[in-house]
Image (cartoon, rainbow, N blue to C red):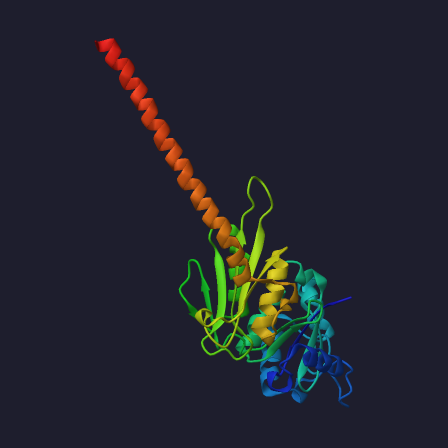
Length: 295
C-alpha cells in the first residue's frame, strides 16, 4: 500500500469543495483513453513538476523509468524513493513508499514544488487541497509579525500552530475586498486556569461592512488545533463559510457579559472603600496608643 499525493492543473479544477471532490472522483477513474505513464499527455505546468520530481523520486514506469541496472544501483534508501506515477491530462497521481512519509518532509516537498510550478496540490487521505493562487487576496496578521500579504498555506499553518506556544498569540486572516461571506477569521489560544486544559477561540465576522455597521459576529470554542486548522483551511482554499448554527453570537455574548462586568466593578469599588475605612481606623487606634505611651 502506498502513500498517495496528487498534483493537478488548476485551470481544470473546480473551486468549490463538493465540485472538486466530484471532479477528483471522475479523474481517478482513469478513463481518458491513453497510457498513464507518459507526462507528454499532461499540461506544461504538470510536465515541469514531473521533470523536477523525477530527479529525486524516479518513476517506476514509463519512458523515464530507470533500467534494472540503474535501479539496482540505488541501494535500499534510493529504492524507497522510486515512485509510481499515474499521469493524466490534468492530474498526476504519485504513490510513494510509506517510509518517506514518516518524517513529514514529503508533503512539504511536493507542496512547495507544486506551488513553484504553478500547479495544485491534493492529499487524498486528508482531503487537503491547495491552489497556487490561494492567499493571493488575503492578509495575515499574528502577534509578532507585521501584516503579511499573500501568505502561503504553510505560513497560515505555522501561525495556527504557534497559538499555544506563548501568551497573547493570535492569527487573523482577512481580505481587503471580501470576495466571500466572511470579512475576517481569527483565532487565539486561551490558557486554562488552575491547571485546567486551555481552549482555542475562533471568531468570524460576516462581510459587507465593519463592526460599527452591525454586521454579525460569531465565536466558537474549538476542542483542538486540528479543528482550528480545518476551519481556516476550508476558508483559505475554498472560501467556505463555517456552519454558524453551532457558533455563539459574539455581540450577544458581549452584551450579556456587560452587567456582570459592571457588578464586578461595583464590588471592587466597595471592597476598596472598606479597606480604606479599615486602614483609617487602624491608624487611628495606633495613634491613640502612641499618644497614651508618650504622655
